[in-house]
Length: 101
Image (cartoon, rainbow, N blue to C red; front, side, top):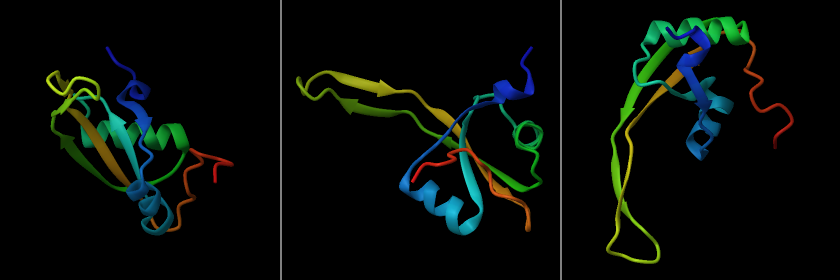
């Protein structure tokens, strides 16, 4: 049995996600593989006390790469699921990275 907070793994910080949070009022989170839109919405509304307009779920596929030292060794990075959350108009921004510039 999972609680609603176990749905969220961590926020994702990339150049694209920082643009989305600044201009589009969207935030990106890595979520559990079994998470649904309603589970993510309920967890974020309860955790951050905000209203959410929309939740988009993206399944990122597994990728194959190579080790830096020996080019022969193949490494497989696992697949993961991420949620792109759009806050409602007039909602306060999330204070995930308070004081980070």
